[in-house]
Length: 238
Picture: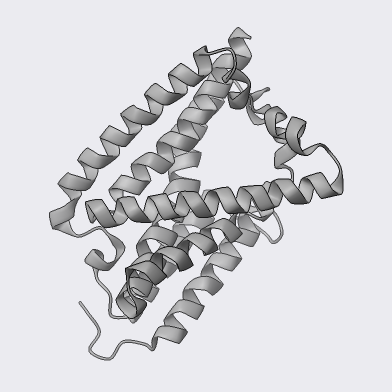
């Protein structure tokens, strides 16, 4: 049910950003965390904000009429990413790009848990619902598609500042480029922010073209989850 007198745009967007700041701090260990419950609470709070703004399922890309098309987009993108990762992992000159120290001591069961639970529930659903669903949908209603794409993508890049602080030590290929100095670490963080902002633009375009949140969800999950799988497989065969 849409509110007859929705909250003002400034209040709505400020509230959404406040929720995301808290979830980001919790997810990165700055404040107390409840694990996957943080993502569930974040999605629930954002859903309440959408209702407060007078929004509907269509605003967040989950309208009933778009689910079939979005699912087809998602499955196609997952297949494409799987093919790219397979070729990249097999070629000697690209194989090192898939090396990741975060998978070095994981068992097969732990990798499966990450792929099927932590990545989709703790990362993909939260981030896509927040940035390509709520922020993109509401800003597009207030200011149009271009502003929505730029704003949500820049915020998506900033969302990755804290997770990127030790990225160069976790990914050997990046460590070789940026080194271990503070300057190199700052460059790695900046690179991660720029890369994820660009990825945000791509995800927004997928949302626009498919008119469904399922399309960027599919690509996002495949990129993260299949990356864990490729790194794990290479660690066991290399």
